[in-house]
View 1 (cartoon, rainbow, N blue to C red):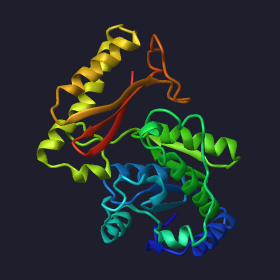
View 2 (view 1 turned 180 degrees about the vertical axis):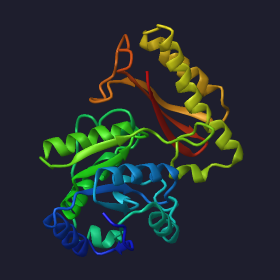
View 3 (view 1 turned 90 degrees about the vertical axis):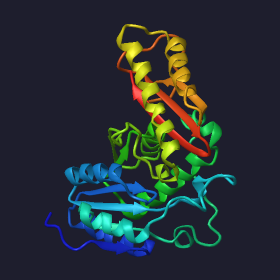
View 4 (view 1 turned 60 degrees about the vertical axis):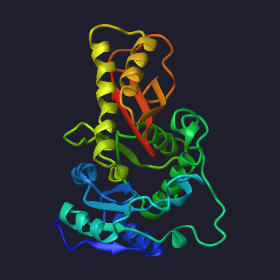
Length: 286
């Protein structure tokens, strides 16, 4: 597709009308769903979307229903003008950024929940999160009708939940998952990294280093889950500002816990931490 000037749409109805016309023209549509505050990790998602489709649509929505009452919705990083410039440079065709009052109008009373994969891990400490994710993506799928949804492996539980949503609600959407993009320090690219000061950022890099230690053990032939998770937890605890929320070994598709022995190359070690007051997640396949 020849790149033309990027369109910015804010009205859900106009987004739906355009999406229907693109389908009628036989265009293959890729959606990159984001919370805005775009960074280099999103660049890779946009590249993958461009490789997969004729038209790339990026949604930039800080989705209030993903946030619990004591979470960071009000201060979550926002950069509306910067996001538009970012998308233009990255080759996005359509930036969709509706006001929440239009996406969820007054009297809106529906929600979509997944009650298996989302129960553990991040679902324990963030009980609103996956219901918000499923509700938003149901709305986006109905408005945009994408052929492909591009996601990052930084949040594998979200990817697994969305795969289940697509399968069980019969959406004809391919889920394309891209490897985690990292900063030079190894810290996974994440909009919340903007919260970190120099000292917090240094401690936060310990998370990925700890996961690498778990992989190093597995690569030496150690398959005992408790031994590997203990090693990862120990390394995280060496950083003064870090507190463990969870460290777990799971099946990457079902998010079911691996109880005793890892299956080499098929076990995902996931971790969530607090770095002072900033919540971060990461994972590694071992």
